Image 1 (spheres, one colour):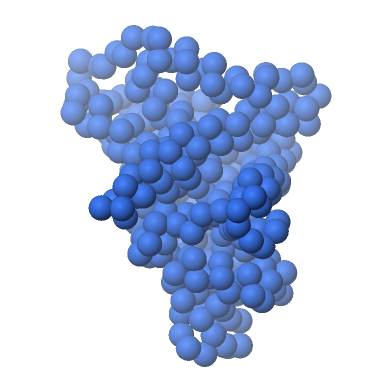
Image 2 (tube, helix red, strand yellow):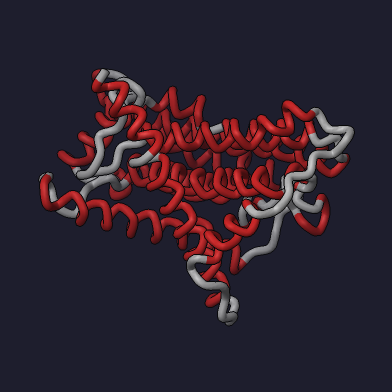
Length: 323
């Protein structure tokens, strides 16, 4: 019963739930503010994403008469719930060890595509031609950026497992880095780290990879027909997903806490964790958005197949040879 209560607390309060929502909205606001500064604009306040959510919650929800109402309503619930569960699974160095038995890379491979599936369900249920285009684009991009993610997971598992075999437990991977140092500074894993750096804007659909929801072409694609609280749920899903992918990258390559130990150091380690996520956000998302345009669908797909996937596969090959 205690394990169930801890799992519910993790999903609803910390590190998922309220904490993931608050951190995600903060990171979204920091991204918009930093992007504006890089473009020599004042930009919105840090709390602008919170105001946007509040505004949407006060609006009316409109459902197209030709839409599949059940799927239309289910899509944002599916995406948001999946990301809250994923956020609860991910451990935080020096703060939280994760839900026992669920911190496995294979489990994460099943959980991470849920937001894309929610968007595809939304695009297909809306009966809008723009939603259908967004559906097909999201599906193509998901196939593209999942390849380097799987190769990166395997590279980390083989490198950490060594001669004893692959190690898929994320808490065990973090324990390995506590003892030997972050994988980020391992020359063998640098290509995989770079591949994961490109995976983040790819799965978030930002910058170069703003393809499924491209406003000039498909007018938000799957989200075009959404409004009010349903659209707010999609924005919250995006915020939590941002937290999930950043925390995953930190756990895989640089999970080391600021100070080893518990008790009074938990808040310091939590602040250090947020700082790492913020720096990674600026490097992987904000700078790319400020400096680049947007790729076409075929260009985005080829980018992951011809450039990002070989980077992760290079680390996997070297890790397998050197184990």
